[in-house]
Structures are given as C-alpha cells and as structure tokens.
Image (tube, rainbow, N blue to C red):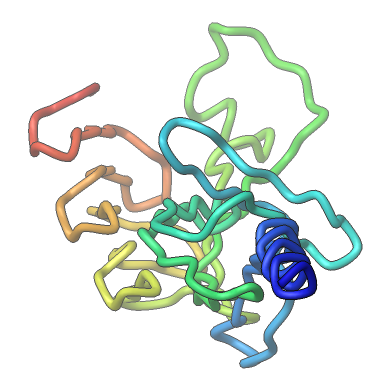
Length: 198
C-alpha cells in the first residue's frame, strides 16, 4: 500500500515539475531556410512569457493551454494551443523588406525638397524582394496567406499607392509616393477601418 501511494505521489509531483517548452522557427521565403526566432514571446491571461534559453530561443511555460504568440520580428500574432511537453511553430518571413537609407549629411529644417534630393537624403527608403530590387507590381503575404503589402515599384522605389494590411486582411496604411519615390501622403487605419492618423 505504501509503495502504491509513493508511486502515485512521485508520478504526480514529476508530472507537475516537467517543463513545457516552446520554440518558434521562421522560414525564409526566399531561401526556404528555417532558423530559430529570438524575437517573440507568448502571452496568457495578461502574463508575458519570454525566452529563457537564449541559446535555443526556447520559452519555458508553467502550463499547457491556449496562448497568444507574438512574433515581433515579422509583426504577426497567432493564437496557439500548447498541448505537449515540447511544442513549436514555424512562420514565414516576409519576402519584401524596406530599407531606410541612413545619412550623416546635416541640413536645416527649411531645406527644400529639391535640396534634400541633391543631398541624397530623399527618397530615403528602398524596397527589396529577396535579393532583387522591387520592380513592377509586388505583393507580399502573411503566414496565414493574407496580403501584407502591395505596391507598384520602380528600381526599388514605391511609386504611386502603397498599401499595407493587418493580418486579418483589413487595410492598415495607404501611402502615396510621387514619381521620384518620395512619400507625399500617409493615411493609417485602425482595425475597424477608421482613419487613425493622416
């Protein structure tokens, strides 16, 4: 009888003390290479769980259940079920990246648009699709298949209308660029479709 109670007690204690692990992987949509992500966290009932094993990008969780996965590196959020001792998920990295040109040129607030162009300060952003400069109509997608970004490009510069979307598929931003790739207007929307900022 004592042996049975000891075995039950031991199995109960060891069942509670087992770590529940989660790892996030990102698949590079350009090279198809899969790598560990280190820029994410899980949330449950208002508590955030961050990486504790930085070598492997692992989060240790106290319990199984429903969590919200926030992948900050790619700007995605997903509801996930943690139901095993070792859990993982793989999301897709965006194909299109926006690079902001850094400059150490100084100028005054009153410098004209033409002056900024001559200094090479504007346009200050360039878009790349994998290793190629964006050219023509380009579309990028979230891991769930919804459109992330859609625009017309010329030699890496956005020309005309650039649209960014929320993961849900609703419009997030409409930016208008002139023929030289210079941003002239930006409208931001909340997830209800109302204008947030212009």
